[in-house]
Image 1 (tube, rainbow, N blue to C red):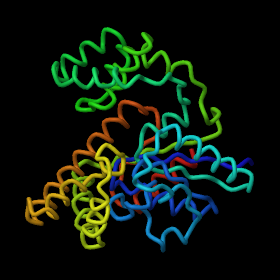
Image 2 (image 1 turned 30 degrees about the horizontal axis):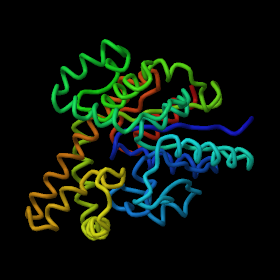
Image 3 (image 1 turned 90 degrees about the vertical axis):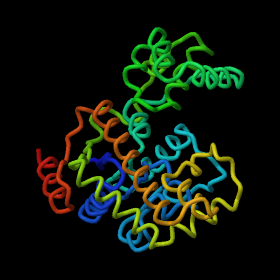
Image 4 (image 1 turned 180 degrees about the vertical axis):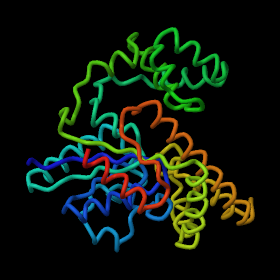
Length: 306
């Protein structure tokens, strides 16, 4: 039997990393990161990256490989992941791709469109239009040009709404049409997928507990070191959930209880957005709805046997 590729998606704090590690240990597999923030060496704690003891239990790839000043695009991740997956297959090992970046899974299974670069003046105009129109009117305008994008982009996702409009404004071709011209990176039948979707109350409780554990594990020190670099706030690493709130504390603009409460709330909101993406974008992937690791493992084994 040829080596397998497992895709394990889920919101933050859902238990996907633990499931991936257990699967890798059982099958002698190798884990490939599909989390946009766990790429960065500067964010071990705030991104909940596997710790050194966990990384020692199975080979891990694309974790902590980038500097925060070096913002990776989806295309750059895809090129790196494609090379890693080829190396793993050449060794006759299974690959377990795990993370919460839905777009990474999308480009693996659907491909990445070769869209022409959008001029800076078009991006600036799109940003100005969003401010002037507001999200609802901006989305309505996008719907006239690219109804598929307007339907699939989640509420509050300003970045993707703006990107869809920018592409149309610059090329006069809808982003959805560009994306429809792609070829999947992974061949159909070469992979199997699982999405973790635990009950929302349990997921939110895990989000809260994990952020408290992050603070105890050095999140404040990590945030201070990263913020001291004075990097462009638009860089992906600077958008890590909890970084801004901890920065408020470090600057004396909030006390620690208030900062951690705000960060916990942002983590829950992030998890909610990820759940929305999972339900809208990959509705056909099998779900694991257990909240505890043992229950998730039992459900996974049942799915894998099917």
